[in-house]
Image 1: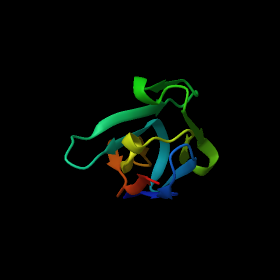
Image 2: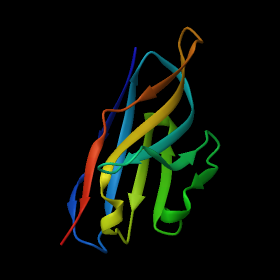
Image 3: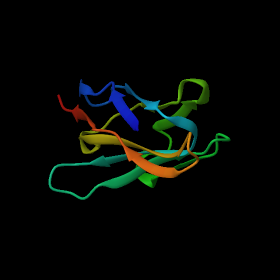
Image 4: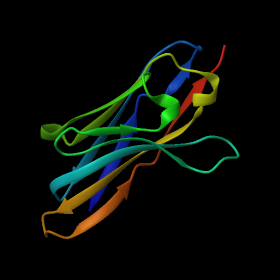
Amino acid sequence: QVQLVESGGGLVQPGGSLRLSCAASGSIFSINAMRWYRQAPGKEREFVALITTGGSTNYVDSVKGRFTISRDNAKNTVYLQMNSLKPEDTAVYYCNAAVVLTSRAQIEVWGQGTLVTVSS
C-alpha cells in the first residue's frame, strides 16, 4: 500500500557530508512523524532524528549540531543532511513514517535502508 524508498548513501571520508532522501508513495492521505534510524554492524537499530508534520525536530545527542532533518510535505519526502561525518556514523540508515492511508487507517512503514560508510 505504501512504500518508502531511500537514496543518497555511499562512501565518504571523515569530515565529509551526505544527504539522504526518503520518498513515500502509495495510498497516502497524510504522513505524521517521519524518522531516521540507523543500524551499525553488530549493533541494535537506534533512533537518529524525528520531524513532525509541523516541522518540530528531535535528534539523538551524538548527531546534534551535525545532522539536520527536513521534509517536503508536498513530495511526501524526508531528508537527512549529514555534515562532519565520523567513522562511527557508519551504518545502514532507515527511514520510518507514520502514514494515514486514504482509507484513514494508520500504519507504520519502514524503508529498505541505505548504507553510509565513513572511511578514509
